Image 1 (cartoon, rainbow, N blue to C red):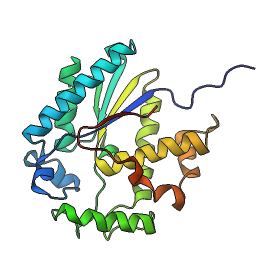
Image 2 (cartoon, helix red, strand yellow; image 1 turned 90 degrees about the vertical axis):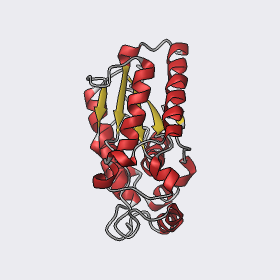
Image 3 (tube, helix red, strand yellow; image 1 turned 120 degrees about the vertical axis):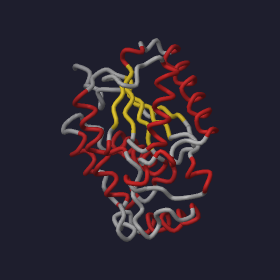
Image 4 (cartoon, rainbow, N blue to C red; image 1 turned 135 degrees about the vertical axis):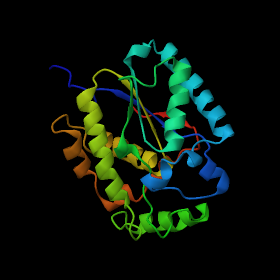
Length: 228
């Protein structure tokens, strides 16, 4: 019997952005309009964190004998994630303005809605409590967990279609990366068949018991994690 094809065409790492100015101010900045403002980029500590994450990734790539030409960086267009991706690319010696680095709007922060935008980080507890009760119910005017899964699946499908045999670093935000890891883990565990594309596989794991538990994959700022 021939060995089955791998579930994914690429290997994946995730990196949460470094400590940002919104982190320091204790603010929720989740809309694309606000998130792309320069004033909501990385704090100085976050720049240092991003550099250390890049150095750690470079070490891992060397240990695994992965050539830098096979590395791709896909990042959220928010200022804090763009800043992080730029620093990492610089550490790796990859030109940021090149086909190896790609801003991907589907990797943006989860929009928590106007009732939470620019308010205190303390409000996250309310959102996550709602997620546990019903991951299909969005905060008013914002995105539910299921909404984010749907757009992340599109991003992943596009990456899988565009690249093959690459090591892909996804630079994004806390909630999207928790949710993305939930998708990866659940697809591998519950939909391991190689039949069907990532969009159809994702639909199979769109259930309350899976999506309501995304917090188990939480990341610290600038935390790097291999997921495949």
